[in-house]
Image (cartoon, rainbow, N blue to C red; front, side, top):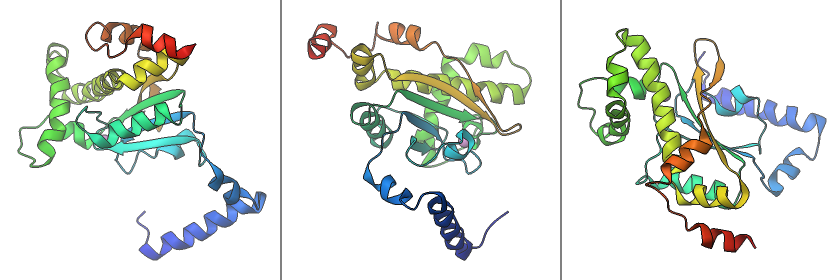
Length: 221
Ligand code: CO
């Protein structure tokens, strides 16, 4: 399965040829601008290939990946990606995609000092604590692990919805809509967790309301 380093450039050459064989202007057009409708936030895991599994072409998906698809308010990288995607690219959908067999989630379930990974994986331990009653009630460890993967996606969706730029843009334009997915490595299928975006947003605004509706609506006029 592993390819030699040199093979990558050979593959790239073939890829370029295949793209321009049907359309000699392909890269010229690609270089002009991007107008993606989707922001995809997923795990860095090498087996979860964002564009490939979605059948997406270059220019269609704005992508951010990190260990265990975590969105944390103190992480400048993911929050900058979201802000840029929402305010400048005006994406219609934000997808948070976790996956079963996630090493990051597994690590957060073990009693181990993982050094620099500790503060990052703390975010997932916090998800466990929020849902401890439900998770502890699952006796089968593999099933508990799968469920934590799903709950982590759900909580990271909530973290996206907590952001002011997401709330404001939604009041103004009725997008972006936030979706939670799990990629099942065992079948290759994407599972939509069908999180209730509208109700989560309403609920969240009781505490995390960062928008002044009158001000936002005055911008609409
Ligand atoms: Co992972």
